[in-house]
Image 1 (cartoon, each protein chain N blue to C red):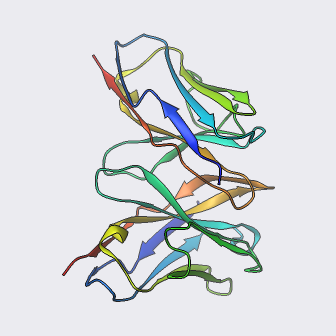
Image 2: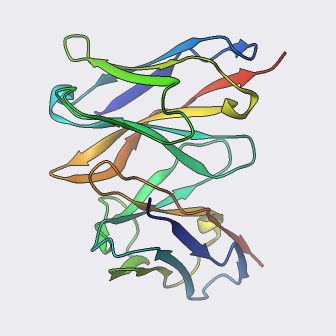
Amino acid sequence: EVQLLESGGDLVQPGESLRLACAASGFTFRSYAMTWVRQAPGKGLEWVSVISGSSDATHYADSVKGRFTTSRDNSKNTLYLEMNYLRAEDTAVYYCGKTRGNSDFSLHYWGQGTLVTVSS
Amino acid sequence: DIQMTQSPSTLSAFVGDRVTITCRASQSISSWLAWYQQKPGKAPKLLIYKASNLESGVPSRFSGSGSGTEFTLTISSLQPDDSATYFCQHCDYFSETFGQGTKVEIK
């Protein structure tokens, strides 16, 4: 059974940093691109970043480019999102998602989400 | 960047009604489109991938169609459990923009 478990969400002040983790199980982690998606309170879904299975390619939304870094440790089956210079508008539930693979980047498994609150 | 526009933003229908949600891309995306259902406090659930393929376990009353720039999600006979927000997503190589969502309510 595929499981994704996010952790690391917290209340932080503007300008601070935070690292989220997504522990994966139930599939061959290194074989799939993984995605971070966020959802601000009462708002829609916003794609944040994607990383290839081998980490040779990453891509970010313009809203986080230069501040957020996605990485993965395939030996630990874990995906990370390093968030720096956090802003109030980064407040959201952050989800990790497993892509379907074979060039299909739709997300057929999602974690339960972890809440990041940026406020002074 | 490719923009995804959904319509309507909200819709209200009776149980048993046929419901259609539209998603338009700002340029052709072939069939690289997915549809998700999200209920309050829950993670989204994949319904349709590659525009028209039903995800395993999803009821057959859900269907997707379209290619290029215009896509539709259809619920053939609306059920009470279908009350949710629906999102489309462009899911091509490293370009994964979501539509703004359509809230479906039961009258």
